[in-house]
Image (tube, rainbow, N blue to C red):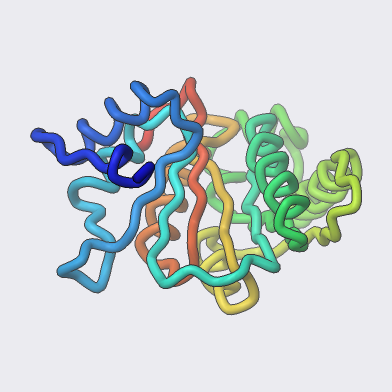
Length: 217
């Protein structure tokens, strides 16, 4: 049958073989599940290797599948965030799901470099100013997106991004996020966020790797 023809057992390191096979098939998505002998996904090996180099989205399925009615998409308000938003909206439209757009305002991202605090918000911006400006940007970001008939909400929170995302696991059926940021600092933080979420999530996670960035581990 067709599944027999699709089944392949190939020698080599799993991550390398998966990436090569995905390229050979011109695949649009790589899906990974939990290691059969472990409760957690093997992030020390296969998944981490795939996430580090995959140019296409990677879907991590850590639990038995269930209908997707609610999608949480985490954004950092960079231009690349629009990719995650577009992906989430298309999935929601196909599945009849709603989308929650989450931005977590995290103090180190906005205060540790003059580039973020100065260039984006002004050199004399206070913490309150930065928070208010980030919240306004989120609202503009969501309002300017072409949603079609997809139900959606914007959620602005103050806190550590990975914690805020994982705290909302019970409210969503799928988490969509990227592995990039607006600055070198944001890239490091967002790389850590994605890794933490992927390790700790009990719901599926769709990780979108920007082609000009690298998975930071």
